Image (tube, rainbow, N blue to C red):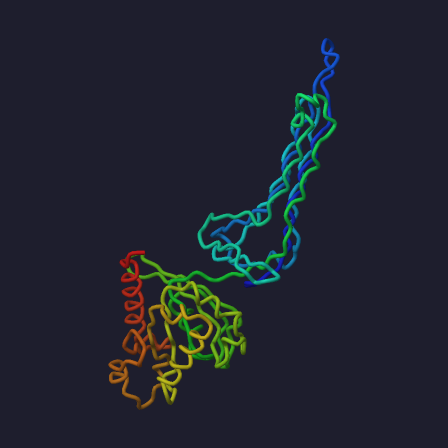
Length: 334
């Protein structure tokens, strides 16, 4: 099951108390203070791992606690630090403050890790408080409390190409044809209720990733339809592939609606490289496909690519074009 949102509470461990102790050696009747420091409380660490693809585990466990630091002891012995807790999440997970929605961390690389809640500092033992005028202090610090916070984990798929289009535009059929992904496919809107990620094996052992995003409707940026649930997954894609049903009466109008929804959600989305295609060419009827291939919609970066996932017509050209666009992006200095 694909889960891309979770709310959890992270509670770091408290620091251990400092100790009050004095040297009691046989030939040192008036030994000085020897209380050790308390150990640090355990941190809560969140780490991105490439083998994970969902936040499903966080449905069943909502609270994570770090270990408590051990108290100090005599003979200047410091307490052990509390056990750190490491939580693994998929690459592409964004961590937000639950109350404000403020982004705290963005785990966009494999192996990247952050301390989501820091363990409390251990208290100082009385050996730290000796002075010339107070050589036998009976004061020690208590351990500090560890940080605690409620956070939101939000997964954004990382893909080379994101498929964008109205419900039933043929996105799921396309990704099932060009990759090993097997999304649910049916002839009615909103068949895809969650994003699907597929790896496309291209010529000579090359490959790239494609994300099938649930269909957009007017008002999606306001949360209508599946709204924000899927729009965030488009943010990390490098190229947007727009799919428009070839039987549509007005290609430009459909494209404009899609662009408007993306732009209202995030202005950065409309700055991405865009490929525009007409799907379902096998049911085009009397439409002149060769003439359609030469057209270009206003505010698009490409000519119209016409294809059929059912028959395979135009798929090779579509894949070639996607690969060429990705190669061009690779050559652009960061």
